[in-house]
Amino acid sequence: MEAGNRTGVSEFILLGFSEDPELQPLIFGLFLSMYLVTVLGNLLIILAIIFDSQLHTPMYFFLSNLSLVDICFSTSIVPKMLLSIHTKNKAISYMDCLTQVYFSMFFPILDTLLLTAMAYDRFVAICHPLHYTVIMNPHLCGWLVFITWFIGVLTSLLHICLMRHLTFCRDLEIPHFFCELTHILELACSDTFLNWTLIYFMTGVLGVFPLIGILFSYSRIASSIRKMSSSGGKQKAFSTCGSHLSVVSLFYGTGVGVHFTSAVTHSPQKISVASVMYSVVTPMLNPFIYSLRNKDVKGALRRLLSRATSCL
Image (cartoon, rainbow, N blue to C red; front, side):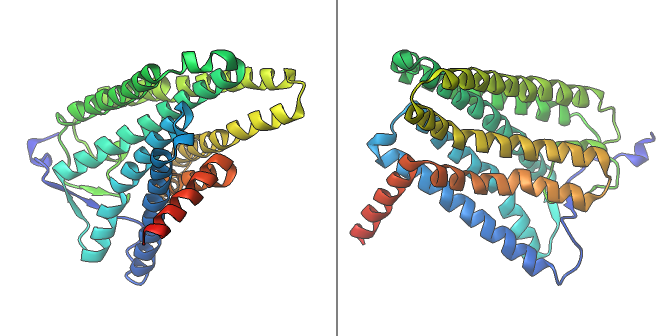
C-alpha cells in the first residue's frame, strides 16, 4: 500500500449504538443507571467483606477482588461512552484508545483467573475440608491474586506493544461503543499476523485452560457431594458453590456469545449488544448473584447497612 494511504493516527471515531439523536438520551440514561448499580453493588460487597469478620475467609477475599475488577472494568468503558453522548463528540484520542484496549483485555483476564482461583478454593473446601485452613492459607491466597494480576498486566502489555507498531488507514471509524482490540486490528493497514496469532494463543491459554480447571474442580466437587450421607451437608455444599457457578456461567456464557455473534454476523449493532452483556451487564449482576444466593453475604450487608444508618 502506498505511503499516501497510511497515516500517523491521532484519534479514532467511536460510532456507538445509533446515530438517531432521539435515542441518545435513552441510551445515556440506561448506561448511567447500569454503571451506578454496578459501582454501588460491587462497592457494597467489598465493604461488607472488609468490615465483617465472618467474611474474612479465602472465598470472600477472592470475591472482594472480583468485585473490584468488575468496578474497574465498567469504569474503563462506560464513563467515556457517557461523555461522548453528552458532548456529542465521538472522537477518542489514539492514546486513550490504546488505554481502553489495554483495560478491556486486562480486566477480563483477571476475571477469568480469579474465577479459577475461586473454583480451586471450593474444591479444597469440599474435597479436603480437614486440610482447608492449611492449604488455603493467607500466603497462598495472596500469591494467587498476585500471579493473577501479574499475568493480566504482562499479557495486556504484550498486546499493546505489538499494536504500537501498526499503521492505520484513513478510515478510522470503529463500529463499537469502546475501543476493542479486534476492531482496531481491522482498521490497520500493516500486517497484523502476529497480533491475531497472539490473540488466538492467549484465548486458548487464558480462556480454555482456566475453564478446564474450573470444570475439573467441579467434577471432583460433584463426586464428593454424591458421597455425602447427610442431606444437610449436601445442601450446604451446593449453597457455597451455587453463586460461583452462576457467575462462571454468566461470564463464560456472555463471553462465548460475543465471539459467536462476531463470527456469524457482520452487524455492528448486534455485536455491540452482545458486548454490552459481557462488559456491562455481567459486572452489574455479579453482586446480586452473590447477595441473593448467599446467606453470609446477605447477613453481612444487613449489618453493614444497619451500622451505616446508625451513624447518620
